[in-house]
Image (tube, rainbow, N blue to C red; front, side):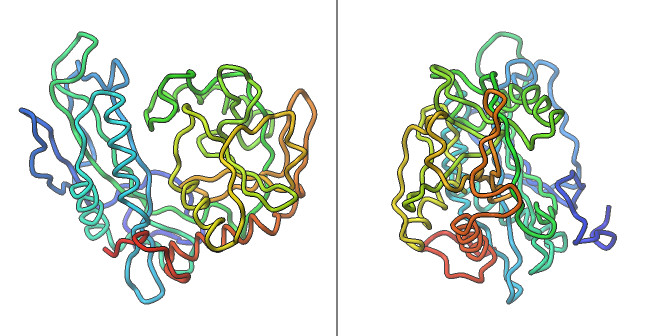
Length: 339
């Protein structure tokens, strides 16, 4: 699909083959010099640990076209650091932050005409990943690795503006108490496919996972982080060793404090105390914020602000963060890397 035939207004979140992707191999204890390639097919050993033992991790970040024509990468250093933590957890070699950011820039430059125009609500989504490859069969870390980044143009997540969604509490666990919940690894997502599919069959946007140990605290929303706003204006978000530390979450915490003057509370969010919140949302790279209209728990739907309208604090947070990303609002120091 050439960029000429893309309708920026109807663009969703679907795979589109773009021109070039970045590829680097780890062999003999070091990352080889990365290259850009047109080939979107990986040729790997049938014994690759990524295929058998889930030895792989990934990231997601976006590049935005600004009003002045320049291109913003949003906090790529944070994605680099999180990927290093995921790699540590799965005994894979770190991709140095400098190499990670440089690779992102190369991919954005090589596919620049796929970046949706300023004001379209779209962005260029980057998918960096590291996989264990090479001939192997035992349960151990791989002899070789591949680090790659490809990109796809994605449209505005909510066509026609933010809309509240309903979610359902799942009886399944996304991760184990001391498992890989805090790492961005494929196994966590594989575990969420069935509960997510069941939630959607029952007309919910996705499911919400409670803490795996006691099933009393909200941890994550589908593949996003949970936050809520209390009646007295506090920004509350779960703190747990099995929650993925989201970069959107981190950014909202910082903006809530510095720009909106809200007190931030990171801690336990008990499911039986959700009536203390007047607004709630899910946050992540794809949608930035998905407002939560209601949460269904034990066959009862608890509605927050409204099922049709988005609460005022959620709206302000969304405007502030998307403004920073697209270059319309001044960014905190170090958040934007120009391509």
